[in-house]
Length: 339
Image 1 (cartoon, one colour):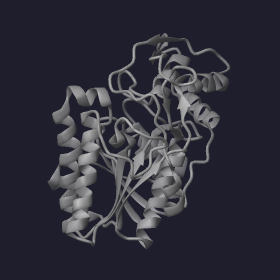
Image 2: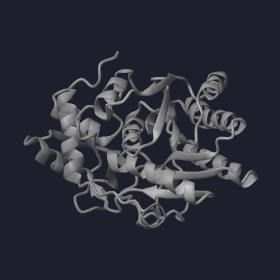
Image 3: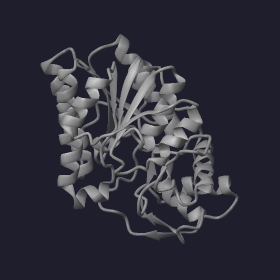
């Protein structure tokens, strides 16, 4: 299958490119490098042993997308391109709406003109807001707490409305929980610009000596150790979920939303201790106040993914941490700025 990956050089996009190639698909990657680096393309070539078909394109650039569609043909699209930091979204809501919602609408307009209507969307568990019951199912109430989550939910509504208006559109919105880890080679991984917004990159940078200690937001939650609980899944498992979603669209057209997680919650301190096992050293950390809007516990019901996609997240928390540490220790300063 010929697959367009928007945001293809990012954390999840790059890992998905690897899994698509290994599954026999032919991905074309586009990205504007707003949250990634060109060097990832060389790393992808090293991992896969193949040339990477890549175009530097901003997903909001309708003319550039048209030009791409005139020189490449596609059977399906996996749409990752969007900014992804909750705190930044609160400070820069227009940036999130222009990129996430505007970019998705522009992309779909171009795809529609070129008869490409198989679409896998990169959504998020943030669409559930503060869950009332656990585990979270796809039928749980949708209630977002910040502009990042709101733009994800608006895009889900956009895509569902698109399918309702034209049944030729076949769409799966994948609601990720907390992707972590890195490719087993250590050549690609999460490479945040500036201060990491997610737990494991922050732990990794402390472990490699780039930061003095980890801030743990809250130790007074009603959880066994007082720290917040989330559903962490290995990024390679997540990437494999996208391959399964493509296969699903080929045989089961329509619109659907599906959780991707492990179905098990782990606390911040559990992840810290797992990382310490991987490094053989201590992760210095300090407790600070809770962040506004953070839920005490969130984890997924993943039975639908298993039933509909035939997919489960199989990699353990120790594998998540070991692979993340391998990536960070091999690349203590992240990827180089240029290829």
